[in-house]
Image (tube, rainbow, N blue to C red; front, side, top):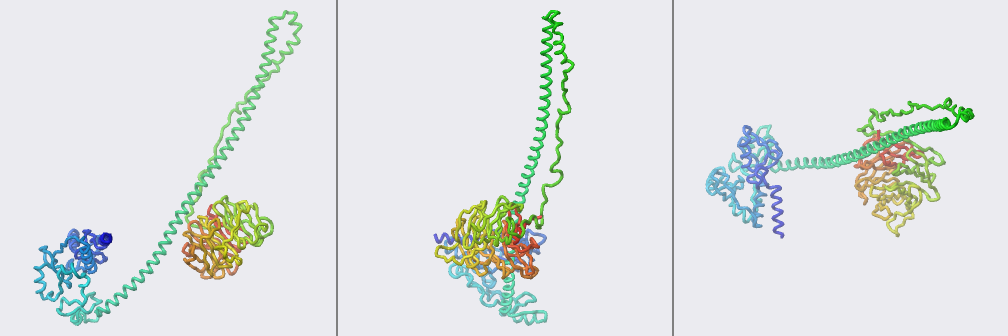
Amino acid sequence: MAEAAAKSVLGTISRGHLECPICCCRFTDPKLLDCLHSCCLNCLDKLISRQQPKADEITCPVCRRGTAVPDTGLQGLPNCFFLSSLVDEFNKQERLLGDAPPDTLTCEECDEGLEAVTRCLDCDGNICQKCLYTHRKKKSTKKHRTIYLDRIRSQIPPIEFRMKNYPQCNKHPKQELCFYCETCKTFACAKCAALDHRTAEHEYTEIGAAIRSYRQDIGKIMLRFEKSREEFKVTNDSLTHVRNRLRIKVARACKDIATKEEEEIAKIKNKSRRLRDKVTTIGAEREKKFEEVQKSNRDKMERAEEIVATVNDLMRQADDFELLDLKPKVMHNLEFQEKLELVHAQHDLSFIGVKCQDVVADIELGDVLQEEKWQLKEEFGKFGSEDGEFQCAAGVACLSNGDIAVTDTNKLKLMIFNFTGEYRTSVGPEKLNDPWRLAATSDDLLLVTDERYVKVFDSSLDFIRQFVPSQNEEDDDSMSWLTDIALDKKNRIAVTDTRRKLISVHNLDGSLITNFQNDMIDYYLAIGIQERLFFTNYHGSKLICTTFTGDEVFNVKTSLDWEPVKPSGVCCDDAGDIYVSVREDGGGGEVHHYSPEGVFIGRVARGLHSPCSLTFSQCGDLVVADEVSVKIFQRV
């Protein structure tokens, strides 16, 4: 099994790193291009032959960058010794595992295709038996080190036969290459340095010094790259966030449009219903009038018909004396002919129609907001002790129906207002001792911090339950003072204990998930996306972000125009952006906007009195508890 796993790993590495991008086979005589990609020498030769007439440049098959062909041809391209050695070592390991492909190394000195039997360590090439004799006799190569390939395959890894000494100069035999000319970008022996590189424009150093300098330069470049990598990560995370935020805002905007569409359709339907009712009412009234007239005419006519019938019978059956005797009565009854007045139809009342108005006209349903700007939409409340008035509005939360819940730390009350600021109801000292902040769950439960308790009310302010957010029964919570509370979309509760400098995270039933202490914990808290906690430190002018377990993510100074400002309330929108209410030393306050990474984006609201808590409504408005009033800001 281990052998099979080793074969699999070798195969994966070979396919990923040791295959030529042209022939897709394992490298043979790899050459290094200017772009640092490598290809087999034979593959490059075939590639350049197809690139006529541009045979003076090779186009990399991987990145399409060009590499100039040296004057000496493709052989003049740098050898990739690392890949050659790695391929040889892999071949050996495969042979040891019994899975090696048959060796088909051919001679690189001649074009006869003879099998190579040796390898020259100085030329880094394979040589057949026939060319080996010539290689050892030639003046320029007779001192080169060669080794038989079967020895490499069976015993010693090729990496051990890499050159350990300085190679010799091709121009001056027996002279070692011991210098590197920075001007010419080439190696030089002592004679080359004295003869060819002696002028002032040539700058050369010993190879050891050159490689040290080279490694230092590479180290500096790599260090800069590490900084670029970190910058890329921050930038990429920021771009990922803004893309997610854009998707969220697009979805919200489409939802708002659909809601507006339904509202407008409902309005049109309501207007249509009222118009139909009006038409129906008018029609019914006229119908009744026509019916009454018609009945009156019919009654008159029936009475006249009855008299006429009686008179006709009398005229046929009575004798002359009887007729004359009844003349007064007969004539009296026949007087209806003169008094019979029928009401004629009022034809104009038979018409009813409607002239419909274009209720939408040419006005768009709404405008697309492509730049985020805020303006004050609504403000309610004033200083006072009456219902609906504030002495210190400190906490705020929004319910699903648009109602706004506010805690007043001076009046010791929790109050409910509708979305226009109309006071509805409240609960005070009879159920609360020292209420501070509050939060609303998705099903409209209100959670209020009250001394060492979290108290739960429904939307009608009926008390439901309470819990003490301690780790266990043995915890000393006598010094506990809970100042803020926040919820995430999973209804996990985070609570700030200012005296104990502790934040605890709970399930909705109050059971503990985790907690941690931090000396910077102050009065305000928010939960963001990805299990992030945000809290401010007023006197330290700090905005801090941690994980649920207390690991710090960032710690930034809150400032404006390089001057520190005092942060208080903090909240997050559904995309994870952070909003902080701040107070200035000279008085007044603002709301500032930060990215999820703690980068200042801009100012949302200005000219506030003394802002405390803030939150978002269901429709995306920003609601701020501003001590003696509540202000609602909307995007425009």
